[in-house]
Length: 476
Image (cartoon, rainbow, N blue to C red; front, side):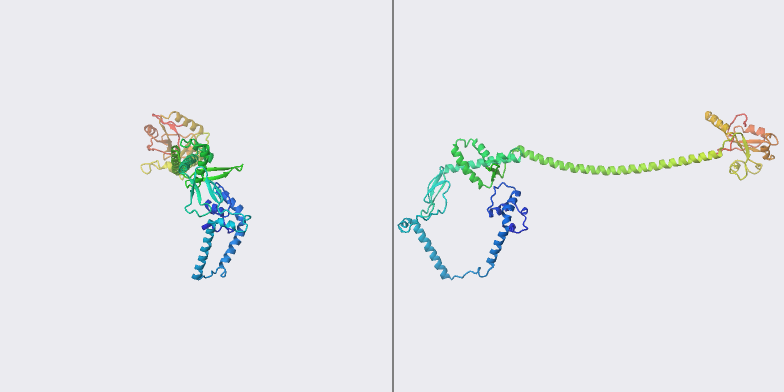
């Protein structure tokens, strides 16, 4: 059995062999099958009918192996050439006598021994298409011709029944038509447009009966020819004959073609189906590639957006922090440098004061200028300052200036603080100013007799914020 002769092994797996090999194993042990079973059905028959017999089969095989290995039993007796030739002569004589007795069997009837009670044994059964008598074919069925053997003394059945030429041609034609019909019906099933019942032998006979070439046969001739054609189909390599029993234990015959005829529509549909499946696979591959590219590009864009948003948020956060901190510092400085003042205050700045040093830089130093004896800080009431700021906002087109106050060198600055009646801008001693834009310098010089120092772009006011009049500078 080739590669599967170890099916008697306990570890044998019938799943690993083919359907043809399973059928051969079942045939070896005379297990019936119809030929239409699937592999699972054949495996079920193997497990049911053969596997239980494996232990006894293994014992028989082992015993046969022992006998073949026995040197005494396996020893062949040597026969000399002379003795071998004598045996051949004896056997030939016995066969000749036996044949002579068969030919002239009438002489055996005179023997006194009664052989009537001994049953006569026919060596071969009578053929199904013949009628026999006394081990002889006496006639044949309709459509068959009796042909005698060229050696008439051979018995039994020296003759046989064969198809006559007319019937043989009709059987061949019927066989070819049945094969064509089976191929067409098998093709329909392959194309999923037919039913399996259309492959039954009875359905094929109905279609065959409708053929114009055979519809002139009688029902008896049609049945005879189709029965013979079925026997021919069993041995045809292009078809497969399957016997299958239904629930009522009735045997149905199916003829399946191994080379089905596919219609043009079926072939076109199969071609289009293959092309569509191929296109679907290609579209899926291209779609996956596009999705991959889009996802990659989207990842890059999202990363850039995240970086941009993070950078923007960092700048916004830093700007907010700077604004808040600046606002807090400005509020603190404003609250500290501009306290609530109810009335006008004038203080003299110490020489080490930062404001003193800052204002000092705007005075000319050295000869012919006099030494600075003091710098006063004049602070107006908060209400007046706010009103002045509001006025400046309403009259932003007018010239608005800042002013500092100074004194003559002969004056003691302390007297202007202690003496509320001190005179200002008078001969001998007084307080005059230094204007930013010097648009009224001539009047200041005329009244105070002081040199005027031009000061531009003063960033901070220790100021008296006033409106400069083109004729004279007014101070409260």
